[in-house]
Length: 164
Image 1: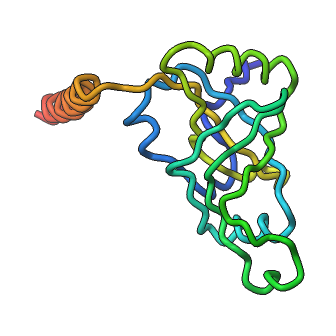
Image 2: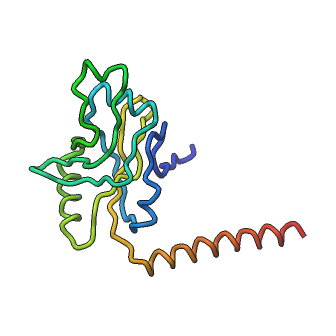
């Protein structure tokens, strides 16, 4: 029987993605967390207009919160629900040990919890993928760009040599 391999990254319908995170941070570890949302926020997420570009996660009173994530109001439900704050702090659902481990890592110098993506898992539950990252300096960003360009050029050269 073949071994099951674990897929990297979110599995399911990606709603919002933070593409700048891997450019601005060295992502050392990723964690999948549930997120507490109101009903109208879930419907707004399904419309695909959320943004997590400037957001981050922070521990407060033994619980983890997602701060500055933008989830717009869902028009048809705006009158009947309390979803008026588009950038409110949203509680993340993690095990106690995960919260303690991530909070201890954030206490170290230069580390932060950055949301990489918000997605719906196959069961339809909203999840957020958090990355524990250390900030990059401009030198690091240039080196990453050089490495990426070299890999692209190397792939082109290899494919060209195979054809001839």
